Amino acid sequence: MIELVVFKTSKKYSAPNFSPFCVKLQCAFKAMGIPFKEIPFAGNPKKMPKGKLPIIRDHGYEFCDSELILKYMKEKYNKDLDSHLSAIDMAHCNAYKKMVEDHMGMGLLYFRWQVEENWSNVAPIFFAQIPAPLRKIMAGLSRRSVVSTLYANGMGRHSHDEVLDFLEDDFKALSTLLGDKKYFFGDQISSLDATVFGFITNCLQVSMTPELFKLASKYQNLVAFEKRIKKLLFQAQK
Ligand SMILES: N[C@@H](CCC(=O)N[C@@H](CS)C(=O)NCC(=O)O)C(=O)O
Picture (tube, protein in one colour):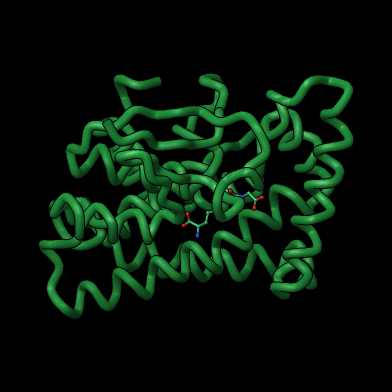
């Protein structure tokens, strides 16, 4: 059976995983009806082939990156979450996924890792598995590395309110695209739905990033969308 390696996340956390990319694949695999065994990983993701999670293991091989894994599922198993999309829908699907992963992803990192008031809530959740004597050192080193990535990307150079404004534009765009539809392209889940679900469910964690909870909560159709997918695919799990 395919193994999906994801960050070990406490069951007390109300999103399926604190990594949006791990949630994206959990959601995509469930929606495609692919049997898989979830492997919670509590070590250093740098040990993974590309230094990140999620990865999958299949027939003795490891595959990295949520998008490459979805492509692999299509090529190897003929499982494709986007087979119902028209060419124009596919164009939107790809463009919005980049917005969510590359832009909103940086915003989420900013509010989790760079904003001082949030960091004290985030660190105990992310580093819960590290033994106490090492926890503070590991958390500090990881934080320094993420903050320098944010600076290099450019997002880290903006003020709290500027980043929040950027994210507001992204939320507005998603909310407009979703409208009153069940999923982004109608009644069937696509890879964009899995991607957005991974981010929204994490933004809705009031204990980690209260400003993102407040922002996401303004978009009631996105909140309802998050609840809908959680109920459909994750209810029995948590
Ligand atoms: N492009 C990758 C991104 C995955 C990613 O950024 N994973 C983060 C967690 S959300 C990670 O493993 N970070 C650990 C690190 O960078 O050290 C994908 O789509 O899977």
